[in-house]
Length: 94
Image (cartoon, rainbow, N blue to C red):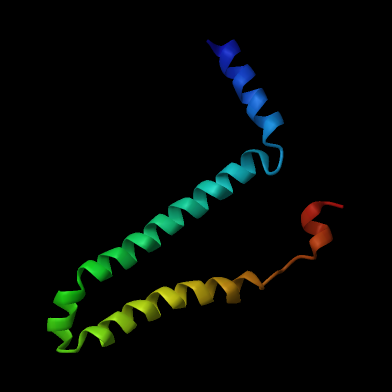
């Protein structure tokens, strides 16, 4: 059993050489973070009628509040992506 598992893991590493194991962890982390954020947005959208009653506001106003929460996540990713403490050559160990 371990021989087959070792050959499968070797095949996966040689076939998907782009990021290797680090690439798969990055993809898993991105998937999990997006699942959390989309669950938050979905939860806010499901609670739209309750939020509308609680804030005594119209539907479009509550919808804009939800859109602003989603947009702030997107824009913060773009802003903080540019913060870089190392030179590109140091990251690649060139």
